[in-house]
Structure formats: C-alpha cells, structure tokens
Length: 466
Image (cartoon, rainbow, N blue to C red; front, side):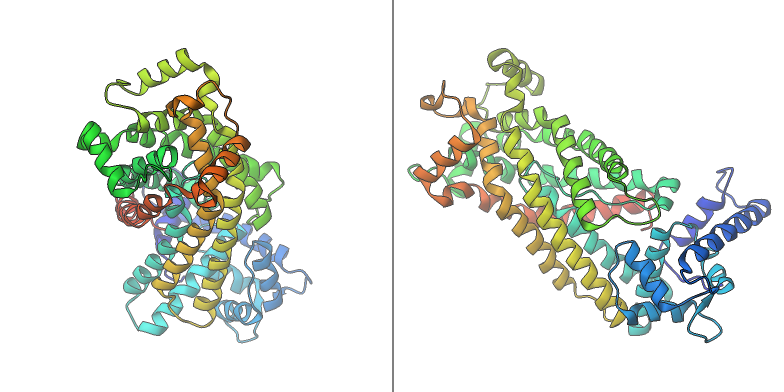
C-alpha cells in the first residue's frame, strides 16, 4: 500500500485499531479496522468528489486543502495527486484513494491533509539527501519541531501575561490516542525548567518596570547589584514559585476554553478553522484563562518586589493582600492585561501563518530543506513585533499590580490605566513605556533553548511521536 514513512505513523495505527487497548493488534481487530476505515474513506472520497464523476482531480484536491486552511498552488495539488495516482491518469479513483490511506489511522480531513504534508516533506528529504528513511524522518521531525517551537514556546516568555498565544490545534488522532495531554505535560515541564533558569532576569524586569526612572538610572548591572545586596543570591528567584505553579491551571483552562470557543463560533470538525476564527477563539481563551489565574499574577508581582521578611510565602502574601487592600487588589491591572492579548495574539498569528505557508510552499514544492536560520529569524521577528506592540500595556499592568509598592506620593491616589500612561509619557517620554524591555529580551534566547531541549526529551520519554 502507499504508506509513506511519517514519524509515529505505526504507533498511531496500532493505537487506533487496538479496540480492547491491550497494546496488541490481533487478526479480528485488524479486519474490523480495515472494514470500518474503508467505509469512512469512501464516504470522504464522495464528499470531495464535487462533480460526482468518480475521480478526484488536482483542482478538487486543491479545494480540499483550501477548505482546511492550506493555501496551495496548483503545482502542489498536482504533486499530491501524482503521489496517490497509480494508473497514470493524473486523477484519483476511489480504489486508489482507499489504498493510499487505508493504513493512515484517521478519516478526518484535517488529519489527512497533515498526512499529505508530512509525506511530502519525507519524500523531499529523501530525494535531496539520499538518506535512509530513519534519517529522513529525523530531519523532518526536527524541522517541524523548530517551527512548533517558535509558535508555542517563544511566546511563553513574552511579557503580556505570559503564554497568551493562540493555543495549538490537536488532531482527532492525537485526541483519541491521548497524545494531546502528553504534549501539554511536556510543554508544561519545559516551561517550569526554563522559567526557573531565567527567573533572575524576570525579577529584574519587574523591578525595572516598577522602579526604574531617569533619575535613579536603575539598569541591568545596578539592578542585579541591588537585589544581591538586599537579599542575597536566593532573592533572585523571588516570585518564581508561583510563576511555575500557575502553568498547570493556565494551560488546562486555556486548552479547554479554546476547544469550546472553536465550537461556539461554528468551527466544523471536518476542517481547520481559519485565521480570523482562530484569532477570535485564541484571544477569548486567553482572556478566560487569564481571568482564572490573574490573582496569581498579582501575587507573583508582589513577591518579586517584596523586601526581605515582608512575606513568609505565597499564602502569607495573599492573606496580607486581602486584609490590607481587599479582594479588588487581586485584579489590579486586569484591563490592560486583557487588552494586551489582542495586538500580541494578532501579530503572532499573522506572522506564524505566513511562516507556516511559506514553509509548506517552499519545502513541499521546491524540494528544499528550509533553513533553520530562516525559521529562527521568522520566529524572532514574530515574537519581537508582538512584544513591542504589547509591552507598554504590560508595563502599565505591572505598575498597577504593584500599586502598594510605589512611592508614598502615589498612595491614596486612584491609579488608572490612562492616568499611568499619561504620567509615564509626561515624566519619562515614550521610552518610559519600555522600561525593563532589555532583560525581557535577554531571557528569550536561554529560555527557548532550555525549553526546546526539555520539551524534546520529555516528548520522547512520554512516547509522543509528532
């Protein structure tokens, strides 16, 4: 059969056809799978055969790709058609369709298109480098993970509520096999390790956002010196505990909210939602998840700014905040935080979709291995543009969260988002809205590197092939 080597394909096939989930595939299960899957594939063929002539043309393949969000050229559609066509007619009949996809464990159109994409890449790598199938799969998998890295890992270190990107879509096969939660666990653990390693830079950023002015010249060197003098080396990690604790609830709520929002806005299970719908669903999921864990964000800021002995821990900080400032204190800065989701998520999604489509077209059609440096440049550009657009809102959010830590002249005065913007611009100029940006940029490179290593090792350890 026309089964092309795609990482994890065998594991997915066994998982989908193993009905009693005993980890083994017997003859009865295999025969039942073939019969049921053949019927599903035939139904899909009939849906895609728009002119009902019993054959799929490259134009119909192109329409199928576009329906799930892949903007492809006619040549790319012809390339896929030639791959499935066995009798040289440049069209695909129902038997060729079934034979080609029978061992691909999904009849979901989005999964089928993903399979075509992976298969095209595998063939391109093999053609270019004449490697073994295993080596080709490794090259392909690394490239895919680099792209995934920039869309899902880099934005976790952009300072607008942390991790407010549009969540990743999981295929039906990944949901059925349980790989989705393994990927979330791998990403969460990667976030824990990388945030802990870059916590000193994160705390320095918060200090500069709140306390740096033209007059005190608080910078990177003086900021580290001040932290070490006031609390020693251990103080560099203040606020990191709650910063890693909030990863789990935020990720869980965001993933669930994203799936529900996709259904609410009318996304069909047969295809991938478009860019506009994904932006709406992702932004809404970000607001929902941030609303859920926002009190933890405020506590994190207060712990990062605390003096030695001010709080004994997370619960002591929360208690004193509640007693001294009331329940509203846990939502200071909430409005600029939520507003900041829109420019960041929009820019991130726009640039990421451009990168993804460029990669598919260049790698699939021109048979060239995409440069990792090119992907690095595109991912960095996406993160930088999103951060520059959202950072002033992040700075105002942090100042509002730290309202009780500001100078005594500000105490007793109601601090609003607009009054803070005006005050900062009047006293510091436009550049005052970007205090702390340098250490925030400095932590991106080590955070991404650490995340990628941990994520890949955890993914393999958990048995995820993607």
